[in-house]
Structures are given as structure tokens and as C-alpha cells.
Length: 100
Image (cartoon, rainbow, N blue to C red; front, side, top):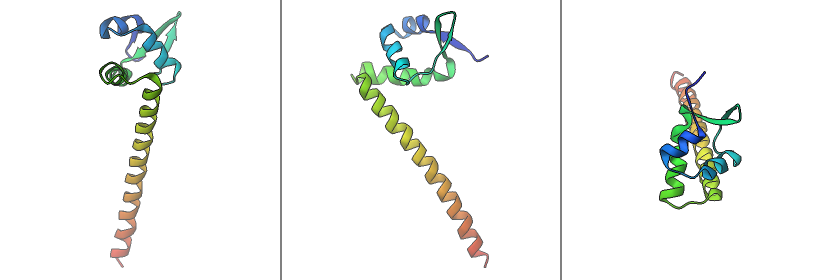
């Protein structure tokens, strides 16, 4: 099992509202595990949680804004990955024609 931290511990450590955490989960922005009615965040997802905290509290971005930004960044990463794949295919094709 992966390392995880409870919702209650998180909001205490990061000094955020529990409703903010719950809204991230409800909005599908933060995956959690639930055990005995306690929600847990995996340690691997802490950087994502911290990013949302910074955007919300430091930049004053509301939940709909967080959803839009998160979705745009996810799509941009997918485009970058697709671009890398296409560039790799192109280099393979160029290599084949240079051998002729």
C-alpha cells in the first residue's frame, strides 16, 4: 500500500479549510482513498494538492478557475507528449531516407 495522509491531518498541516479539500475532491481534481469514512490523500498526490493551495490562496483563483487551469495544463502536457512522439517518428522516417 502507498503512503498516505488523512484529510484532517492535511488541512491542519497546510492550514487550509476542510471545505477547500472537499471541493477539490468533489470537482475531480484530487483523487482520494476512503477507509472507515476517513479520506486519505496519497503522498504522491501532495504536489498537486500544494499546487492547488498556491493557486487558490496565493493567486486567489476560485474552484472553477482551478478546474479550467488544471484541464488546460493537462491538455498541454498531452499535446507536448504527442509532439514528442511525432518528432520521434519524423526522425525515424528521416533516418530511413538518409540511408537511401
